[in-house]
Amino acid sequence: MSDGRLVVRFPNSDIDEANRYARSLADEISELSEPDVKEVNVDRENPEAQDFGATLVLVLGTAAVTAVAKGIKSWLARNSGATVEILKNGSVIAKHLDSKDAAEIAKAMSEKTAQTK
Amino acid sequence: MTGDPVTPQTTLAIVLGASEYPYTSKLDPLKPAGNAARDFVSYLSSDTGLNLPSTNILNLFDVDESPNEIDKKISDFLKNRQASLKSKGSPARDLLLYYAGHGGFTAGDQEYFLALKTTRESREGPSSFRMVDLALTLKQDARDLRRFLILDCCFSASAFPFFQMSSAAEAIRDKAYDTLPRKGTAILCSSSKTKVSLAPKDEEYTMFSGVLLDVLRNGNPKKDLALSLEEVGSEVLEGIRLKYEDRAVRPSVISPDDREGDIADLPLFPNASRRESRVEVRLAEVERMLQSTIRDLAELREVSKNVAELNKRIDTLAAGETQTVASSPAAPDDFQTLRRMLPLPVRAELRQLSNAFFSGLVWIFVAVGLSVAYFVTLYTYGSGTFINRAIASVMWVIVALGCVVLYLAMRGKLGSFRRFPEYLPDEPPAWVALPEIEHHLGDRYIQLLSLGIKSPFFELGLLLVGMVGLFAMSLQFAAFGKAAK
Image (cartoon, rainbow over all chains, first blue to last red; front, side, top):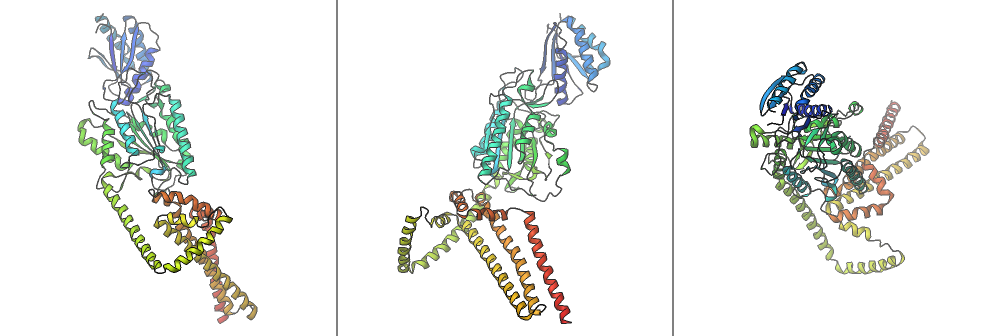
């Protein structure tokens, strides 16, 4: 995966909440209007489920990482019960993140994105 | 307040959902939902299923129309069919809505919606059917119906708050649950509000609808002749648990509007495994009618003994009929002919109705006779005599009891007479003849019919008459007791 593809999950939420969070966070990141945000998609991990998906797929360029990390932080601040985990190539690169972990989010995302460039 | 049982003629059905989503790349075709909707529609119209008339079914599955257009079609269907059935004398009582597809939450306001064929990626809100809109349409245009919903989609129990009764309705909620409710909403959900529903790969149906169709097609021999939504829900839950074990979704039945009682307990679906029992009941009915016909034939044989006399009468009648037909375009025997077309049980009802009339007239004549006797004795012996008081007492009692007897007799007969097309849906002559009889009786039919409808003022009036009669009787006897002392 050389395109900076990240998957955001909501591990401590019920599936209906995760559906809502994924949509909501997708909107948040889309509204950043960052040109280096190449793709924001809500994805269905279980193709047999009759839902719209509970995970968020992000394809980011390096320049967008900080802005997206800030966006996730601000979204987490508004959704106080939510925590996220971020995966890259199927591996968890950061987990149990909440609004206090903005620096960690940015660090994890930028490092991994840079490594894959 | 009490409602009537569920019948095919008075039940409307709507099928919604989609198996293809051409405007979003996120959703693959959901063929199991398409198969389920197709077979559910077959079940609705099949004579081994719900046996609904095709005009009572609105199939909007996989239609490529906007939510607004679909909403209008639902609204028009509900209004038109209710008006049509009402004009035929059998108003719609029940609505069954089935949905199969994807359920999700809109961006922004996070509202629950049902996906349609028109659902667009990232614009699910305006291109799908929001539950709040569907609930509003059903609450407005099916407000007088019992609403049964079957939702096969993710988070389907999320529909609950949208169908909850208003606080005003809650305040006047009827606590007496011993009668059939006339209104309410019950939902059979394929999953809870926090769980997904599943369409297993390589299976014909979705997990929920597959077992639902099995339950509806096969029934349960241990249950009654008809299954309630609650019973079907329990059977589906058990069936899914046995078939899918750990993967099983967990359906549930919820009743967001139970102001008159929980309609989920109402017998709704014919129990397929008891079909033979239903046939046995019908056979017993046919046997009873045959016996009645045999009795009629015996009477005919009796009549045939006097053939010669009958022939003379026929000749006389024929001559009279020719004259009547010549003078009037309406033949006088039409009503009798129609009456003969009616099934035997209905003719028996009509005979009993005539008997009730006759009884009422006898009561009235007796009361009038006693009144005359009362005034004669009053005039002859003066007031305060024993005979005079006794006659007055008897007269009051007869009048009061007569009213009650006449009312009860006519109400019972007319109540069943009014609904006999429902009891005998397979008797076309009954359907044809009823409007003719109504025409023949004119205003009298409507007046009599109104007696068969619950009228608290009428009952109160009768009760008062009866009480006045009893009061008058006790006064008379009290006065007699004093006089005797």
